[in-house]
Image (cartoon, rainbow, N blue to C red; front, side, top):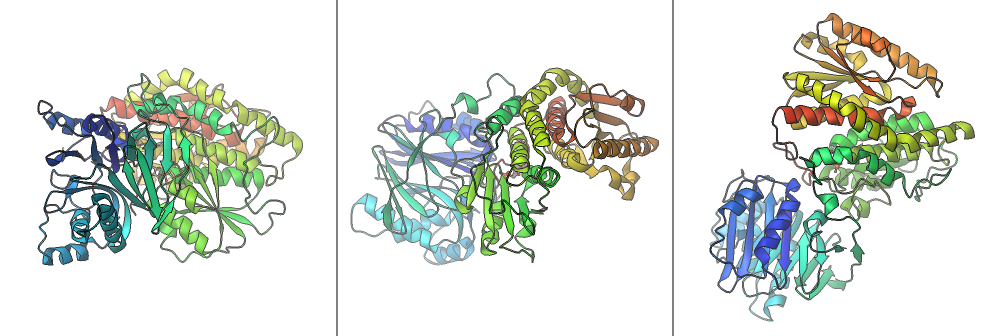
Length: 622
Ligand code: G6P
């Protein structure tokens, strides 16, 4: 998985390409490179490291006169991060340059074929076969543009796997781009055009964007964008992006992650907006299980943080709508003999990026079963939206930090809306209205955690940062939040953290508990007088029992507990206070608190928070 960009226009290409790359560095940051078309041919600058490292190595004193070029930031798949494996890759004559995001599955056999034709390869990448193949497919007839386009088409017909590519060639004043199972957009400017894997790369230059469709091939010049699919010219609508560049910038925060946690209240508000009127929820989609839901069920498919959001969604929808929900990791679903009744199961793919390869594959498999499919995603026009029958958008805005934060909270909001949607929910009117009121309070609740708990959380983060292992425990609707808290801590602070069902610790993990394994326990209960008091009270009592067991084994306990809960103080070592809510809504404040805890712990340990090692924001490989 990588980020690719291209520019063609009248301005200096190099600074624009480098700036665009920096905007999408979250897609990969182990190496980077650019290729510019100059009067003398193609000039390539690339190296191991981040875009800034590569910029430092580019000799600015040598002026590079170029109005078009391509760039790449890499997350290694084939071949370790190195200067030679970094993109762009060239053909043997150095006249065709290619940047690629995806995986060419048949590259080995193509490479052998090209070697037998006398080609020399310098990298270990799958990508390098592409420029060589293009070179071999070039015919000596027609103008340069036509020749290149046809050679790219012929090359693509030989590739299996996934790709978004941009091709630059000596003597051609444009770029050729194509996509299959990897995202690609075109930013439309005034006498200039941009190509990129993702919108933030071009936002500084333009808000006019064309999303390329599966199988599209585009020839982009400074004053024209020509697109064809399956050999026929097609027209793709231009969309106006409402995100501003400020939305994609840090806005005074030290890290994108901290900014994005602080945007969680806004993400809730923006997700509710459009779906929630005075006393009505309109998601504007046909789930196909409205009315009599008997015999009908939902299957959720997701990866990573989105999987934990889905697990929480299962509790929320089953509690509010009483519709059974199953859940599978997309990567497991794809290779299992899942028994699925296509006519009665609605499949929901939860993916903030809309590009996760495992989730896209799972969506396609669900369609083969004949299921109605729904994508829940944050990215307009992403691949998931094209595959699924229906789409529900979360309103989190661009999320740059690799660790998903505000997009997770926005996904939870969609589950509340789904659970409360009248066509599914069988709630009495009074309870429905009471839940709606509670849901509307969530932005304010999230803000209260940010305003009032933040300082206290920083203190506990300093303490947590000294340990190498930690457990996060919860029950019911807050078990997924414990899992999410542990995932967030491990991915950005590198502390080994395990999320566990509190009742399961006694079946193994107790053996690991010592005074050096702090346990973060989610102990929130409902606000007195609110709905489903009995169940909530019961879970709270059970959690207190589990905490006593943990303490008996010598492990320190940090509780996430509601304001005003004095009882909890007796049993734990430290308390992070969050505002009280109805039980089913408690995941919102608890999530904000745990995201902050992970952030401040990682900061205390001096970690590179927005770009944790070995990870990437959007995982477009299986
Ligand atoms: C990557 C990201 C995670 C994310 C997961 C699934 O691993 O680092 O933050 O949860 O992919 O991504 P999706 O876009 O499908 O939600």
